[in-house]
Amino acid sequence: MKVGLIGYGKAGCAVAQVLCEDSRYQLEWIANRSGSPTSAVLGGASVPITALTQGGLATWLDQHPVDALVDFSNAASAAIYGEEVKRRGLTLVTAISSYDDGQLAYIRSMGSHAKVLCSPNITVGINFLIMAARLLREIAPFADVEILEQHFRDKPEISGTAKKIAESLAVGGDKITSMRLGGIVGHHEVIFGFPYQTVRLIHDAIKREAFGTGAAFALNELRDCPKGFYTFDDLLMKRVRAQILAGVEP
Ligand SMILES: NC(=O)c1ccc[n+]([C@@H]2O[C@H](COP(=O)([O-])OP(=O)(O)OC[C@H]3O[C@@H](n4cnc5c(N)ncnc54)[C@H](OP(=O)(O)O)[C@@H]3O)[C@@H](O)[C@H]2O)c1
Image (cartoon, rainbow, N blue to C red):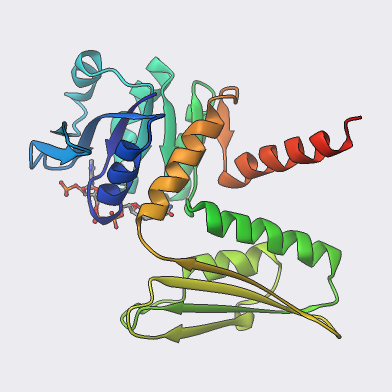
């Protein structure tokens, strides 16, 4: 699958690395705001870098066709590439976490023309943790629940992921405990306190490359999906359903 990556900052660099190392994908080009530098050496090959502009994108795509776009830039970029996604039916994986309601509605509308995955949390691990925690909450609503998040010393705000975990378990923000310690990349822990046992679900982020693993997973899962708008949860549930059905088939 030929892929174009939008955004080559802290996350984009790591994602590019992962996509280049994955034989299922061919990273054809990278687009950022400035178009600088003009290329990046990844996996021993030179990948061109272009500036993402409204006027130039259609010609760029004609000359450098791709099957999918992966977006790690910012919320404004969708307005630049959106019509090309629709017109060409390009698969889109966007990891942008800061869309406003109008931008999100526009991303959703692309789902009528193409396969679109939008996930403010794109690691496989965190999405799995949330799914497993929701299941346990459903099975044992009587258990006490606490969420612990640990991040590097200078992270000022409460982790958005911890808030999402709390929301998905229908517990208040008062159940989140934040710790700021040295250089921790990201630790999320959901603790279920039963009367006679304790269950801890733990995710530790190690490197930003985990975002690339998530994007690669999403691209692969979308291959078998019809056009539409998907969340990461939808893709994981598709796998879970397949597993359950495989288990019940004679
Ligand atoms: N869903 C997740 O799990 C997840 C994980 C990590 C990051 N993210 C999201 O990914 C985005 C990037 O994060 P980051 O930490 O890598 O930020 P960053 O280091 O600031 O990098 C941003 C990149 O986007 C490019 N860019 C900005 N505006 C653009 C535009 N209009 N058109 C094309 N390129 C544009 C910048 O280009 P220039 O360098 O030329 O300015 C830069 O390459 C953020 O929205 C963040 O929320 C999501």
